[in-house]
Length: 139
Image 1 (cartoon, rainbow, N blue to C red):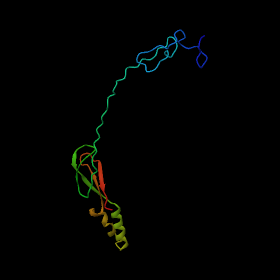
Image 2 (image 1 turned 135 degrees about the vertical axis):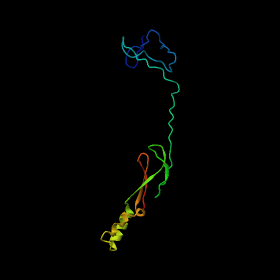
Image 3 (image 1 turned 120 degrees about the vertical axis):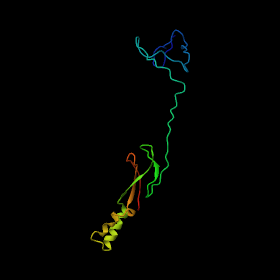
Image 4 (image 1 turned 180 degrees about the horizontal axis):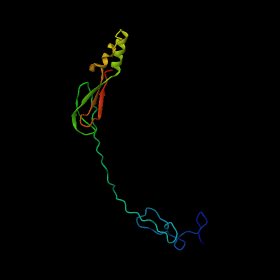
């Protein structure tokens, strides 16, 4: 009597009651998929240990920018430079202007804080490539 599987079809290996053994297979493997004349793709063997890619990351400590030019390494051009500083109006400049206006310096004297570098914010720029490196705010 011929045995049938769960789907009611005779087993694939009816003439020999034991499935074929394939060397290197961890479990019994059935016949290759596909019909006659179909080619099963052959994949190149994979290396046992794939190559490890090592990426070096340089972490530059955060630099404290002051109100004077400082020596630092520019992240854009990788040169050690002394920064160039630019003064720009900030919160302290505007508060000083408003305070002078309130005490009676109405006719242009309230604009004096915009001419005093000690009341303005400082921006540090690389002298080689012109990249903005950081800033220091007065308030």
